[in-house]
Image (tube, rainbow, N blue to C red; front, side):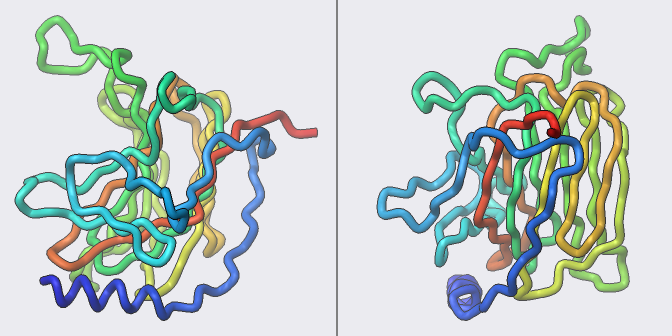
Length: 236
């Protein structure tokens, strides 16, 4: 298992990433920068998370599921609150580059700020769900099964499906996502030219940090890098 992981890390070191397109926002314009990853900095700290294995590899965040957790790997990208100086996300634009290295499912998700979610009186269902929005890439090991990516509005139960596109994350290839939330509209562009866009129930509710998730077998993983988050401003 360690040998496989090491080979994956070495492989990433030798990849020459093709120039990714400068995806342009649809719903608004980039405003003030809120967050920008710098995983190569000498004082770079790994994102918080108790689930999964995480490490920096050549300027990228590598995320791998740990079977002992009995749960997909999940990390908060950064801290929210007075200590960090980061405020809740409402309307924003987020860019993230990713490369799949055998993960069967990986996601960028957004949850409500802690304390905003609440359950019904029966204690079994959510009156206000902790989740808001999930962008998931399903890449099963069986090539005969559909490979795709999708967006779900998780802000109310039952969740609403906003769209699916067929897509295979080719090995050793980087892709770019551009995610936008403005009002009740959500748009997600992928660097291969695909877009999923729709209206959600409560997408601009105050949210915590973006959450990166990964489902994978031992030694398999997904890489994230060049992550930026901007506040949204109205188009000129």
